[in-house]
Length: 53
Image (cartoon, rainbow, N blue to C red; front, side):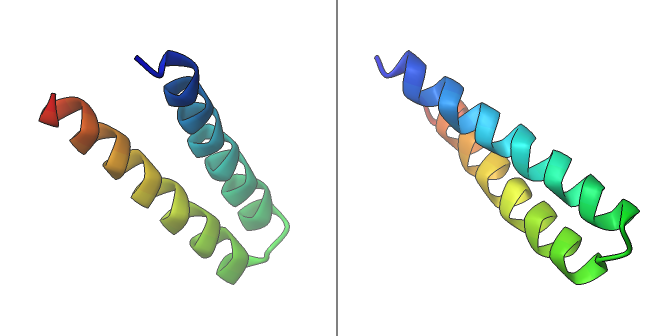
């Protein structure tokens, strides 16, 4: 049922949020916002997919 694919998606979301935090800590706000926005978009997509089942 694509369990490993789902896991990869969750890991990529977590990775993007970790990157966003690191960018914010180094003062690169625009990169942090982009990473956080992409992460939030992917996370929303995962949640909608789960709710859609």
